[in-house]
Length: 186
Image (cartoon, rainbow, N blue to C red; front, top):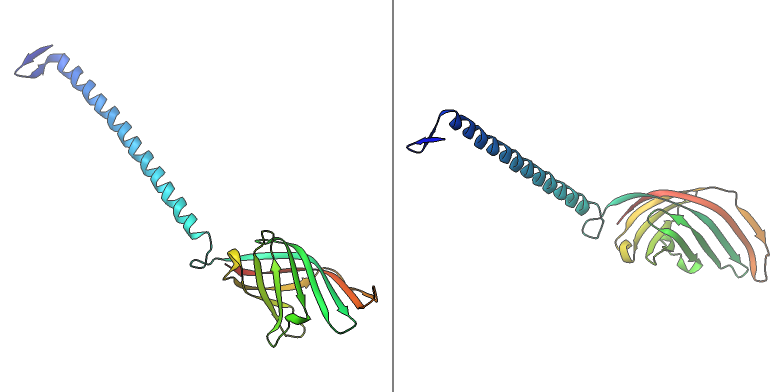
């Protein structure tokens, strides 16, 4: 290789400059590839974080969700005029649940129910007095359902079966299967 005042001369100059340019091009491709990879990963992380922040519900960020429940219900009428209502079943957002209501849980607003979910959280609701309709309104709860709202409409899945005088002190017991669909916000 011949140098004249720091400049490469002849064929070696051309070959050397291509090699340097080639390395720069290769290095530039690697750098651009890394930049793109970091950019894509960064955007992916931001997207996941944005979705994760918008998904979970809380008191500050309630989310409305459709839900469905199905279960077996039992109504017991006692001879002294008092009664008791029990239900057990399974539902979305609830898991397995139990519900209890008695004649003491009735006031001017309607019949008040407490549903205990699989993890112990409770949902409070009321069935307003409305002949011919079985609409339930969610009024709050405990745990993740503390500020829950929503409602459901129920449909019967089976005929009511009534058994008279099954035991002393009991006038009759009525059982049936029921399902309900609604919207819960929590």
